[in-house]
Amino acid sequence: MAGFASPDVPAYVCYAIIVVFGIVVAVGTINRLLEGYPDHWAFASTWGLFAAHAAVPVILFWLLDYTGAIHDTSILAAILVALGYRQIFTGSVQGVTLPGQAAGFWKPFEAWVAAVADRIGTKQKLYLDRFDEKVRFLIFTDPQRMASLETLVLSISQDVPALQTGLAAIPATGNAEADRRRRLDMLWRDLRTSRPRDYGWLLYKRDIVRRWRYWMWLGNGRAKLISGASLVVGLLLLAGLSTWMSGAEGGIARREASMLRYHQWRFLKPNVTDRDQWRSQEFLAERLHAVGADAGRPAGTAPPSDALLSPLLRELRFASIGDRQARSILALVVNGHAPAVDVYVVPELIESLRTASEGVRLQIRNALVAIQKADYPTAKVPDGLSTWEPKKDESAGDIDVRVRDWHVWWEKAQKPASPEKAPAGSAPRH
Amino acid sequence: MMPQFGDNEMKVLQAVRRSAMDGYRLLSVTGLKPQALVDALLKLEGVVNVKGELVEGRVGEAYVALPPNNRSFVDMVLAK
Image (cartoon, rainbow over all chains, first blue to last red; front, side, top):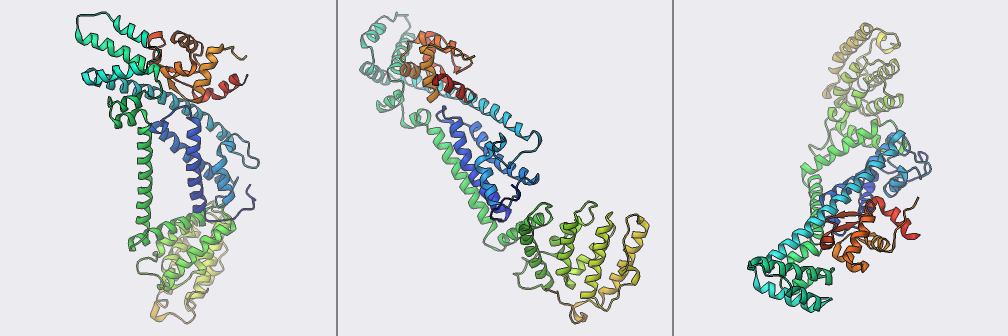
């Protein structure tokens, strides 16, 4: 699947596809799983289940990318995971296999669905009982409603003689309220038996219950209300996010900061596609040139050198940094050289010479020499530094000596590199 | 080993396979008498989920549902 021929787009586009498709699939899945439970969207546990089903493809997509099974910049992989994540869990999608015991992850999910269904059943029963109790209380306390109910039940009963006989046979207890309650219970049972589907509607039509009560408890009103409210909240969140990320200067800065963090992540990610890394390299190089030229962008939107390069240069000190990553980082800073950038980059590179990897030390040395030749040609690097060949068994003390020598050179180099004394040809090479 | 269910149990399974419902509606859909419904639901213990009391006078107020995990089993039973 990693070599899958698919359009390669930014990862955030693929994640957006996964989220949108995932939500659509999750709605369908929940409706199918709980199809036997009318009104299931009226319960918080259903929404929890929905959120989990919507999140699973996103997590699975990330996991499959992390393990190298797919690339998170592949549109087709995104659609495949969003639509077929259940099949991937069961191992029935060829070429996409989950690592280790991840396939067993689906089992607790099924148990959760069963638990939610059981909870919904309990709640439905509770709500029906409450509706019954409330309506019966209303009827019991209102003689007019009682008379309406009696008329209604006698007009729709499946067995009028039996009902009349039953009503006549209710023994008098001497307590008027108890007698009325017994009468009501018998009428109610007959109503529910005769018209089990639309008894609520009939009660509403006879003005025994109000429309909202009927709609809320028996007309799927709660589910419609909660679904509508959830949709409105979702749309408001999207609108809020969109407003926050766009418009005025603050929005532009936030969007710029988000894009910067995104491209820094992609640039350092070990298993990105060549095209994806190129995209990030282009973005970061463009921002670096803006810092170097200090122009071409609205005031306050060009990121400072440290915000732009700090996460990347810090990686150079990591002992197990990949050769490709180190080369990419150093190529970026060398290609984007400019005195304004060097002020931050050179001291960082010098300190990064302390890294455990002799290969990376050599690459850093070469980068420092390249920057010196480009921006500080009059500040010669001592031969001992420019020809230094880092070795695997070099002691920390030896490396410290080199680092201090580079710092001494840098202090000297900075003076002629000030803008008014900058030598000809010190502009960035692009 | 597939359990053997009678006609009444099959009627109940057919009804709750479509939708969960209260006992009054189940009585209407299946055409069973209250005691017959109580007996059928007792035989279907573990297959369908019953909330409420299984006694003749109150079976109408029970709430009967088919758990999602048992749906394929019930489909198999109904197909036979």
